[in-house]
Image (cartoon, rainbow, N blue to C red; front, side, top):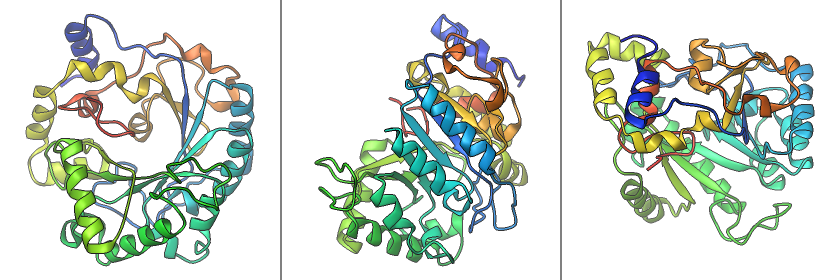
Length: 330
């Protein structure tokens, strides 16, 4: 399958090319160090990775946020973003500018050395947490993420609930709303299949986590496994690469295209390069529009109306109900 096939499919099925709308979110990959090395990880993060954002790059990102008020959200990912040196500086700076901050958290990071106060820090700065929990049973979680991860994740969720995350109101938040500090969970399939309907699976998660552990959360986000990096290696090892790619292509849903995250998001790497999404960043597919680094841009409105770089993996975002960093699209 050729690199341009996805763009052709969008043009043919939607009768218009895939173009960027106004940028409202900067998603920063703050660094690739992580306390886990999950089988599905599309960034191939792990404890031995050393790539991390430096102060100069973090300061430039905050300067761009200040100069571009239309960007309302700073979305921090990794690796484990909390383990990167500039994480707290970015949180404080973005919140001081009145921007929403998302922390894409693996939950186990909270019991690693030096991170014991991180849940309180996040609550005090009203940071939205999007936490990975690929199942509500220990067997499935540990098959994907490693031994002992499920119990550690449950303990972290209990800590977050105690701080007001996923519950009404929190005295620790600077501007907690009536719904409290936001806690979303993320599901992704164990193998080469599409996620089940998001609303139905959310109901099962809510019932199981509440009954067994007393845990509450706001929303469940279902995300499709992208056929890149570690998951691509797994598919190749099992001889299922073509099967999975065909599944994604055959379930292309044109109704998902208007809501694709790449239309409103720019991805920034730990070293300041710009990409059309986090998956393109991991494949080193540069942004279709210029400029290409945070030091070459002042106004993100220059991206509006421009083409978006695509590849075969993009079918993962449009298959079935669609998939984005905010869950299902339809």
